[in-house]
Image (cartoon, rainbow, N blue to C red; front, top):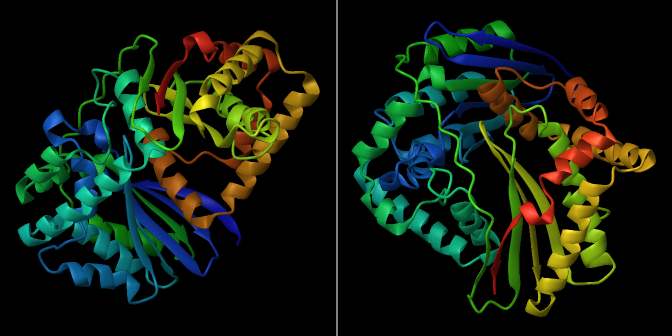
Amino acid sequence: MATSHTIYHTLSNGLRIVYRYSDSPVEYCGIAVKAGSRNETPEEYGLAHFVEHTIFKGTGKRKSWHIINRMESVGGELNAYTSEEATMIYSAFPKGNAARCIELIADLIGDSRFPQAEIDKEREVVLDEVDSYLDTPSEAIFDEFNDHIFAGSSMGHNILGNEETIRSFTPEICRNFLDRFYTPGNMVLFYMGPTQEKTLLRLAEKHLGTLSPRPLPEAFTAPGEAPVFHLTKRLDTHQSHTVVGARIPGMHDSLCHTYALLTNIIGGPCMNSLLNVALRERRGYVYSVDAYSSLFTDCGLFTIYFGCDEEHVKRCLNIIAGTLDSLAQSPLKARALDAAKKQYLGQTIVAGMNCEQLALSTGRATLFYGRAITADEVIENINSITAEGLRAAAERLSYKSCSTLTFE
């Protein structure tokens, strides 16, 4: 697939458009909304995710079946997901169907009715999803960890919500959330494929240019720093699950690339990460150990997850402490740093070949940064990281600065 220029345009109502040409036989198109679980009040926990589910359940001119069938009938897919600060609604489809997709997205955003009968059915689906999630300690532990590290803020709750809030959602509540956040100035239409730019802009103007602009949501207040905690919760699980983590700067901070590289070195997806070698390959303590950097608009979070037999938890924590403290105390040697950069950039290139993820990341980057981040920028940012800069960032992750939560 050859991909060339990226073009930005803003409709008169404030809706931003990012267009990325490719000669692929598959097109990708969707809407990125700057709204997620962080926008909810306590009475609304889970509402952003619930709206993402039920927006497909009926409009003024389409029933649920017609919405689903609109893209699937031509071999396409209609998908969506919700995060803390964004909701993505998008479709992948054979080329030649961009008009069909954009018209459908406009109908969903502008005229979703949230029929009561459909809401009641989907409510049970979402509640089953919540139960399934809570039955998976390796996933549920992250939400409980966030509850503590972001205590007192809207960041500290499960994206899925809880039974009490989910059972309270009505068509009016869902539509009100849509009206508050699915407004042109709070959204980005993203497209990648062979449809010509002029055609794509004409379709966007026709179907989405009529959406009425409304006031934008208020800016978030950054969560306060919570005290370091070390907690253990008894669940009588077969395996113990542990999360170690600390706050880091957010997506707009100049250190975000440094923390991305540091995360990859500590516990990235490759088997040669420091913790995978130390905990699994050398000692066989864990089946998996992973490190993550989650970046939000005004804050970030670094976490390490591992699952092991209860008898190995303390040993694993000691090894993690030693690994983090070693990185904070001594800069990597030049050869090791160069190797880490080469590996990270290679992973980035491979990930960039996933067309669907490239389209989604283009939309998300435009939503939060105002433009897509180019491969050359990523290479420049990673190559500019020094051993001392990496060591200084690691100081924030020294074990004494980290909190821990274990399910046993």
